[in-house]
Image 1 (cartoon, rainbow, N blue to C red):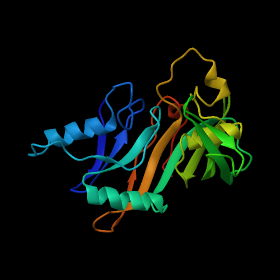
Image 2 (image 1 turned 90 degrees about the horizontal axis):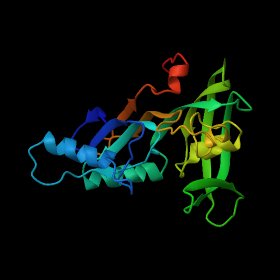
Image 3 (image 1 turned 45 degrees about the vertical axis):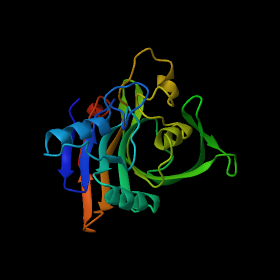
Image 4 (image 1 turned 30 degrees about the horizontal axis):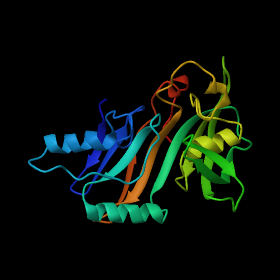
Length: 233
């Protein structure tokens, strides 16, 4: 898979993760983003040592879109602090099967990850291991298809929990298109989906060295987004 590089300097690299590629190494041993970027940096520099590439945030394997990586320890520490403090703004675009209750809204849940199934479940506040999960959404369009009503939605992810958007949207009865793990409409399909209708389309942050406000974005692509005519937001 080819990875599009959006921006690179001595401290950070912004790129577009393809659908189906892991954010970092996993038990599949398939090529992942960290390995790809290390090879890319090694091939495009004069360094003789293994390049430094740090994961700042993750995207689920079937999710594509913008990711940020640090190229040194100082940048990694700064960006991790920004992420922890909620100063890195992340927007996703999604194709949902169904309609949300309002055109705008905030969704607050408490989520628990089940390591045995690698799934996230909605839990009661105060439940063991439950973490608060918050996102904002805006419905951009609702349209009829041969497969039912679909919604095209912009999501601002406030917290970054495991499978958060997928679990929260499913709990509202509007699962992500193609999501065989959380969307009941796709759960029993025999088709193997390597991508779902969820895309990291915009990330805003402060440069870890210069402090400059930076915005990186990519227009959604993939089978789900081919359904509609996309406009920039």
